[in-house]
Image (cartoon, rainbow, N blue to C red):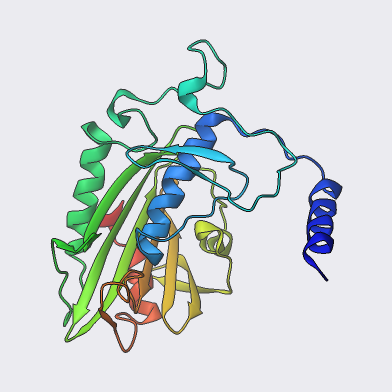
Length: 270
């Protein structure tokens, strides 16, 4: 197949699918901001970010980013929020503490995210340390509070775990009551960042936790409290950006599946 035939086949594939509904700018910006932060946690801040169905999104202090395939999408690009009139029904209306985007940079929710980081540090497994500061352009610790589509808040914390010369990671994401995540134990576990996987239910003090072992180096647990709060805890043998910074991985995951499930139900993470 030559270049012209490939281009024709790609165009036919794109045009043969129904046009997706337009995405509200509020949803686009929030999804873009959260996806950028998650991608930074898993693969380094300098890596490219691909966000499905978002043609152009606004990221504070990073400008615009979007597709670069040269293939025209079926749906027209959405305007950036700054290009929308103030009375537009799709004009984002962020809380004052969000500082103009989906994430809080001050106020109650920012403080909640920062407090969650302190709580996660209290849960560092025996034999491991959680380094502070930066390694070049990468943070060993980070916290974020972001408003989700639907108006509720979620809090994301990530720390590096060190043992000897190896570096892994521990990530916690907490969704407030009122979230739209699935209600059943394995449904909510496999919904984590849309990663799917095979869920194994575990019981911790009578509470049901879903645990997903993605591979030898990545595992997470999910728990929904009775008030609706959802807690995700993910452990990994690498920081995601460690190889770029010259850091070696941990030889094994820091926690057993049972220990990881116990962390997910810890009331300090609510």
